[in-house]
Image (cartoon, rainbow, N blue to C red; front, side):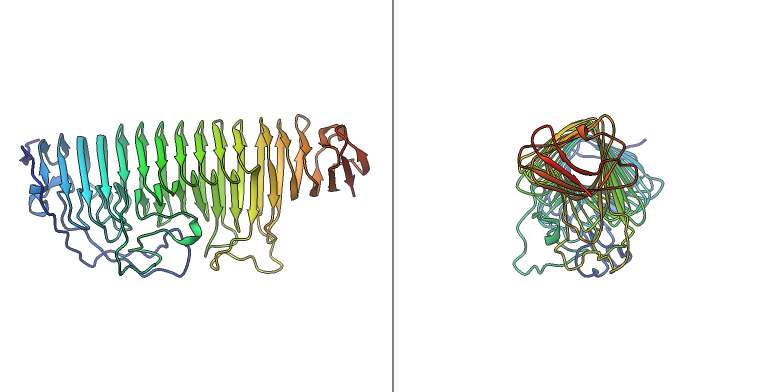
Length: 468
């Protein structure tokens, strides 16, 4: 391919991005609060602008690019620097585009204006295109200044790269809002910050390999406005939030997969919203609050989040899993979990006024947790009065309190209560030796069909089991 431009030397310039009304974003972002106004934005210029596998020189700000080579289908060894607000670094659009950025650096500063549309992103793919980053280093400074973004049926693949968003200072006249143009997360997410490092939206897919993703706050690997389906996958990546923020987000309609990753999060490893699923395999996670926070806001009472965890090590300061007014399937197999405050799973009524409320008399899916092949210490506390919680132990020993949940214990499991516990229903065909309680602790339970226990039992460690 004939090179369109070869840039040598070092140049810094101002990139001007013009905004035109062509695109709408009707889907809510991490939907908390009232419905947002539509964000109508088209990106018409960037430091490097590529459309349908053609480098468009008249829409590219060439002075912002130094060193290296820019061509129709690739750019390598380049450096992009801009301090213009809302300017984009590399922009790839069109279903014919299959573009590779290799061995390159992008540094942008100044606030963005709409990260839902990717305005101000370091590298962005849009309109059904494919963008591949190899050994790229992208750093942004400024509010809603994403390092990378993928939207509108596009594919992003990132290899051996470092992506950083440092955030910025909110404008003095900024007013909090929900949706396009929002510069900080909604209060209900329990995090602060002003930028999301990576964004995958609107029927797009993102894949990260052997890369480092860092956010000063808000979020590192984010999804939003799925449009029905978004897929996010990270493999052998280091994911970090510094001052606050989540490691990853699974919005309604999103599917996140993490294989052999390390999370070091100032807040939670993942937030899950509405109907979604997240899978962790062999993940090491150190979390300032929770490992997973699951919630449903302005959604359907049938929405359900599915959390699958296999192997790995999880350390949290608060509950390992917090479920806020949400239906949930939680499957954890062979993981080591340490909760500093002694809570493994906790459910509550979400304090957000826009939570998805269950009408009186309606029965919903509830919260179902299956714990396999583990030795666990910590409490399971069910405080959401709008739905039920059930716990299944399979090849697992649990030492802790259970509050207002049902429990099924298989033949290879055991539960040892450390505080007074109330079990809504006790299920499983087992003898009383599978349940224990320390001296002075009483378990109150109701037997379900198949459970042969009835009456009062003195337990091995001195506690008491009362079965109705």
